[in-house]
Amino acid sequence: KPQAPPPVPRKKFETPHINDLWMSDFMHGQSFRIDGAKRKLFLCGIIDDRSRFIVGARWTLRENTEALELVFKDALAAYGLPKLFYCDNGAVYVSTHLQLACARLGVALVHSKPYDSPARGKIERFWRTVRAGFLPLVDRSTNYSLTDFNNRFSEWLTHGYHQRFHHGIHQTPLDRFLADQKNVTIRRVSEIELEHFFYKTYRRLVKNDATISVNSALFEVPAKYIGAYIEVGHPTGQPSDLWLYQDDKP
Image (cartoon, rainbow, N blue to C red; front, top):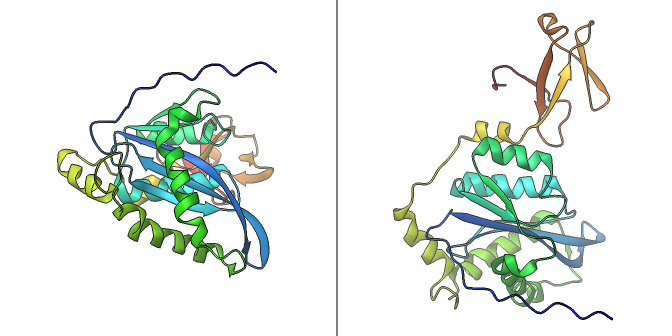
């Protein structure tokens, strides 16, 4: 068999302030009894590079764009906007939907090289902490709802991981995150703006009968748009809640 290439030397890296860089990935978890059925769970997480604070995390049944969007939006609403959003080259992270959302937010979306897990070493190290510190506390024979399972994990994050001494930063993630807040200006967007930034959008030509087709469904639009190209969008998972955009406003 061909030998693996020698490991690449890596230097320690850390951003100057919180929200300079968020790192995201999915962890493949174990199978648990969820709502009466044995289901494999995935953990979507987002870690702040400077503080190692977990700004967003949620266990889901699928590794998909919808799961990432929920976690990302919760993190943005709670902790503001990062300058860089760093992730791998998986299909979830290279989707046009995520690229457009980050562009609207003014967040730079950056991808690591393919098959380069050490480049995301901080969140990979957090996965190891989850496997060693949280999963052994979960009873595999108990029947959970997904909400109950996530509540247990949030409690472990709040009272365990975030308040435990981290040898990489020589303090707790919570203390470092809070200490640096006075040194940065947190960029925020309103809840309504945040929702619209993540809408799935389409460009359509209005037919002579003043209709357009989106996701195999016909929608009627004002007659003044006949023969023109328009932009429409809807929330993820709600294709019938369609909005028409004019001058980049819904």
